[in-house]
Image 1 (cartoon, helix red, strand yellow):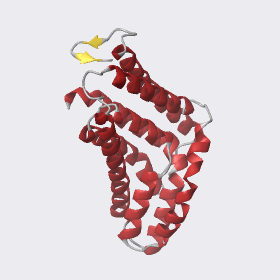
Image 2: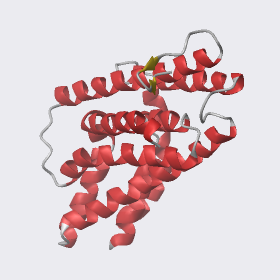
Image 3: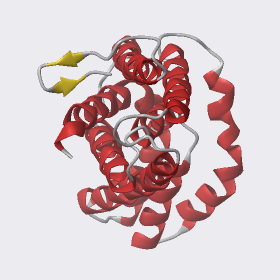
Length: 235
């Protein structure tokens, strides 16, 4: 597990920076709607928001469990075979694609807009009273199409272990909580320019993760040499 500490840290930071930038714009309105609902019901907001975000992060971890299991089936754990090297290279290219979108490339916007099929479920959840609606909204938020989540899932799948990938997505999800928690409590004051800067910084980090995955695949194919930093294998 210690081999993946750097990956967990990168996922945590990308979740934090991405939530300060991208997520406040995309998920912020939904979180604010939850806040308004809680205000109307005169319930204390903090417990409900913690439950909401716990539900969302659990969905991320469950998705990580699935992609990690798939990564295990194709042999992404440990030293890569030729086939697994090709998969790692493709994963790296996918992560780079998502990273580029956060640096200003636009194709991803249409992909994220494809989540409209969840609108009815979200509308239903918003009408529910009590904690059932809060948990349902958090879970649906976790299923919304999002390039930041997709990139985190691709990185997590590269661990080739179901539990490790789930832990990676748990770190990512925890990183997204602070900004959205503040937004939900109605105290967000980040300007659009600040959010754009945070999004681009997250994009750079995602790009670096994608490059690492791609180079890992290329080294498994014998096209580039492996690189070690002390006892840590960079790729």
